[in-house]
Image 1 (tube, rainbow, N blue to C red):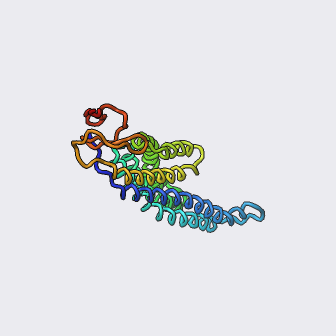
Image 2 (cartoon, rainbow, N blue to C red; image 1 turned 30 degrees about the horizontal axis):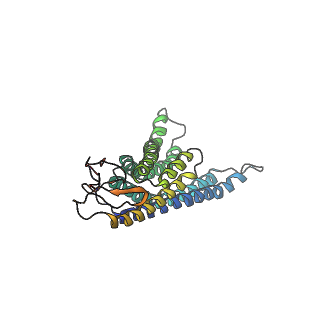
Image 3 (spheres, rainbow, N blue to C red; image 1 turned 90 degrees about the horizontal axis):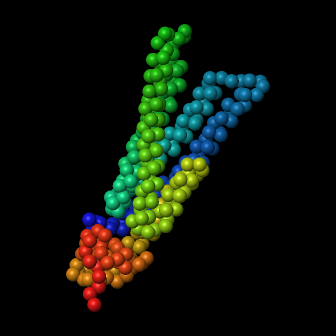
Length: 269
């Protein structure tokens, strides 16, 4: 089956979103760490004599952290949704199903995170609303408080794992389809990210760089694509490839038959 016409503009936009997503993930991590450190400063002072622990200060610390988290999530959501959309489109363009799965699951993760935030906000209020003395049905209070949090966390965890695995497989698939090493590098960095989290956004940035290179090469190779379907041979292109004159698929220049349409590519002498 022949591949549809390559949209170079789509590749460039997808590359830009990859850059934005990766850089923002790095910035968001720094912002959240800084917010937590600032928020727990007063709380840590309560842990030394004279002990001045109070529910009010604990609540203030929680609210400060949640405010930072909410701001970060508010910015992350649209970036992740748009990034997921472009992953899906690139996967469709190059017939890489795992990349399409990554795009869809990424969007679901972005939509599930606000549910987790809502659950975190509701949890303290629900627990503080438990009557004194606690009723025999206290379990229902706790479960009611935990339900939104657990539901959102389950969605984010399941589809986050699907996104992670699909993205790695999709990056490998793009390497096989295009021959660009940057996709393989992104996959390796993603795997390393299991142990060193900071490499995950770097993997997304490298993925964007590979997309950008692919856009340049596709733009160049379009010029070399044959205009007439009756031509029996085409000029070699980068990395020893050419286009099949019958179906337009990109093939190695030294093959005798097109792997897509099985037409003979032998030059007639």
